[in-house]
Image 1 (cartoon, rainbow, N blue to C red):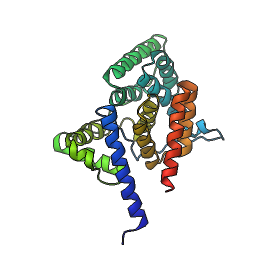
Image 2: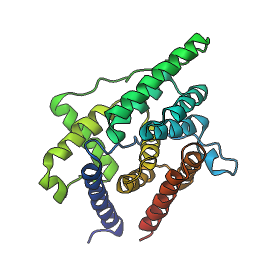
Image 3: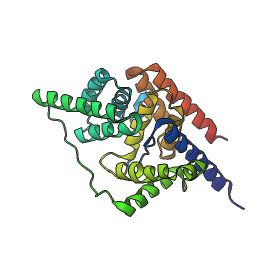
Image 4: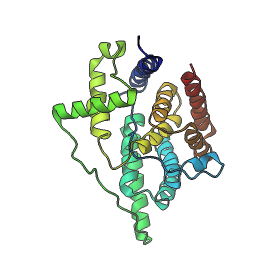
Length: 262
């Protein structure tokens, strides 16, 4: 007889597969991004929820939200603050490239253009920002890329991802596995937890994508991001993005905690 734990994992995997499907159909190609189980998050808690995230992690949030919302004025300030907080130019660039999977190429390209302007302005002021690094391992190609992406997807979901949606549109799952889970999340110059903080922030900044946001809150918790840290993310959104964005995250956290108690 299967254990309760095994049954719970199967139920959670099915629910996550449904959310992943909703993410693609409701918001377009490449709407799911996942976080890496490696790299633990640094915590410097002194009682406030935002201090569950270090300065660098907090800096990721308004950069991601502003870029996804298309708010270039906010993005400019967020980029300066993020670079001051220790983000490298390569890390900031990775975040803004990833925006395209959630908010589309136009906003991603506009945000990258803003980063170029900010970096040049800082250089002219004599500020030497850390360049950062490119991926340390080659990105697989062909069948190896599909295999790597499928392994990443399976690890995050807790089991193979399948269901009626992917039976109806199998190419959508293939795109997820090869491009999103493969091409993007095989890039190791930004850890997966940072990518997931960015993803939650992007989705929270947009209305009408609550299903996708909920799925990423679940994935974040699956990979070790604590509810207190997600609450800290909401606090940063409220201070630097919008109250509505913050409330979407808080609602998602409550729903996820309730689901895990079922």
